[in-house]
Every structure is written in C-alpha cells, then in structure tokens.
Length: 138
Image (cartoon, rainbow, N blue to C red; front, side):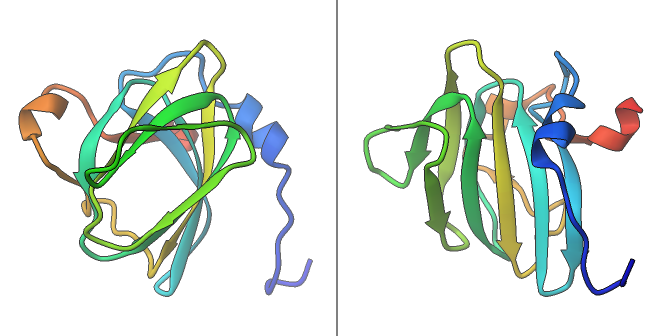
C-alpha cells in the first residue's frame, strides 16, 4: 500500500465502539497531522457546552439523533447525514436523543490538540473523562 493514502470502513470501525463508556466520548484517529486531524467518535453521555481555541471543527453525523447546541441559538435536532461546521471559540454541546449510538466523523483544522477542550461550566464535566481512545478497549 502506498503511504500517501488509506481506506477506511467507517461502519466496521463504528461497530468496534464499546456499548458503554465512563468517558464522555470514545474516539479513534483516522488521520493526524499538524494541518488536520480526522476522527471517528461515539458519544456516551450528554456533552456539556465547550469550545476549542486552536481549531475549526467539521462534524458529520453518521448515526443516532441529537440536539446540537451552538452559540446562543435554540437546540437543533440533527439526524444521520447532517453536518455542522463551525470556527474555533464557538461554544457547542450535544444532547443525544433516543437509544441509537451517536457516532460522528470529525475533521479538525488545524489538528486539535487533545487538551484543547474548554468547558463553559467546568462543574458540568466534573468527574467525567472527556475522551478515551478506542484502542484502549482492544
């Protein structure tokens, strides 16, 4: 295989996510360079309002339904196939709706550092780890 490209079966990767997690999300990196990181992640608990200082975010919902909170706008119901794109420092949060797993394909430009997660109300996330990586469940 040429090192300049890779193929991914997102459905197969999505099936590897655990049924339950103690962290807010579980993710796996598909690509990770200084210019851009791409991840597949599953949400396990409501994600409190937060923002990222160093990257813009592009989120494509692959499965599940959720209320997406962004800025001061009213919550917007998202279904599979819908995408939201927003710039760094934009406050956002996620409230899953229903029982189907919520799985996103995320692209961060430039790369999002793992510690670039800033909660509006740090108490809302107290006691919860933000992310664990799928590879830790192998």
